[in-house]
Image (cartoon, rainbow, N blue to C red; front, side, top):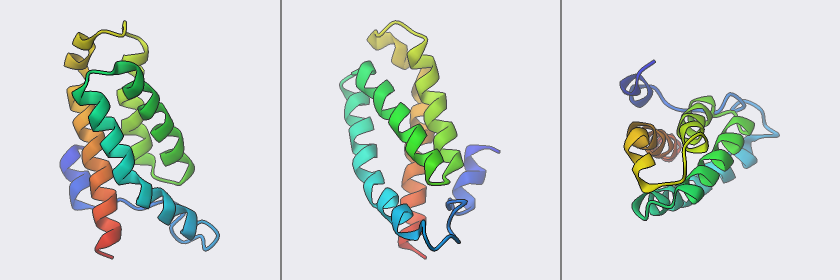
Length: 115
């Protein structure tokens, strides 16, 4: 499924119908803009260690709250950063993954605000 498909369809948690998870999912979505801002700051300053750590944390959180597409995208950003030396030129090979992750997070937040 390509990036355009994610943008057309709402991004919702697989736990969206679970009343016990509803508040926790809301908190996760509420924190996403701050997580995206931290990712963007790490990206803009070429802080690969922070970028890798933030992607790893988001991968786990997103998966735990049922946002599989965000978790997968975060893992796709984290993996090549984990396998490369921590140098600024490592950003060259992961820009698409970074942009995809930011777009998915923004789309998830926008979807909640419009429902």
